[in-house]
Image (cartoon, rainbow, N blue to C red):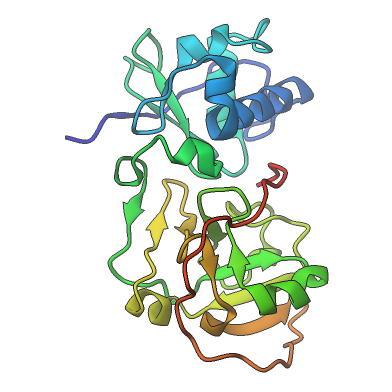
Length: 250
């Protein structure tokens, strides 16, 4: 049986306007993102195979002093990309309450959890599968493919025009290049795809790489299509490293 997901019902707290977070809660959200995606071990907080940690243990970690359980509930409910999910607990409270990040885990953290307990494995490829990145990186990407860059997965959105939305999970507002993936062809060639609880499509490709032969259209956010010579789609020879860790902005 799947664990019960808790939907926090925030009381009048420090969020102010519904769906908004003040600076204090933004700081808490960043601390939670770091611990749940990258730093649980460093913080001395035990992470279960499903990627969850005890909320009580998290709040005892360094840097969380001065924050209350209600602050955590407010962050879960009001952060714009629904980065976190609560599991267990009675009415959103209690020692049994656990929390995890929806996606964005570094590879070292992901190595200790089980994907099938955290994510939904997709049996059918999404028709729209877009990775947002920077135009300045395109020359490298078309030669080397998309890489996980120290994380567990490459992130994709299924929205056809993510740049027009206020906030999209798995897509940074700073992106100015859209890579449309031929997910069906990649899946047919053995590439696994997953979906997180907040709707982000995730894939580690082959050994942390998705070759550019599986790219479809590549456009700027203004709709200009890039002309380039696409190589034949083929899984890469799997090697070890897939890049270094990047900053946590999603």
